[in-house]
View 1 (cartoon, helix red, strand yellow):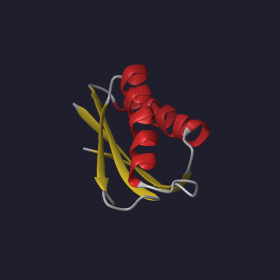
View 2 (tube, rainbow, N blue to C red; view 1 turned 30 degrees about the horizontal axis):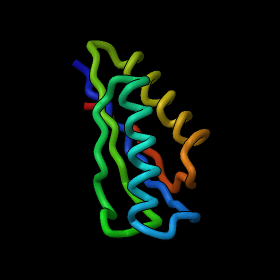
View 3 (spheres, rainbow, N blue to C red; view 1 turned 90 degrees about the vertical axis):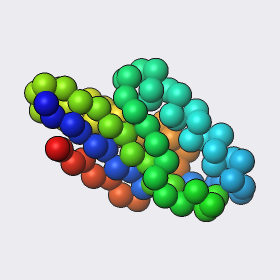
Length: 93
């Protein structure tokens, strides 16, 4: 069993409150969970309104589908999220 973990750190330059940040994250989370069927969590910077660190987890019996899926999610985030990805990492367990 291969577990894949995608870590994204995102900066929201146009967010002016926690409410705006949470609205952006909720929209992203709902789209990603529905489209790709993965687990999603905000990991850090809960009280910062222009920054977040999120984690996305999926698993499969083979590494290739996990890698492909996490790269698709990263590409989706780069294209559709109203922010700038500062850091992105994929880890396997």
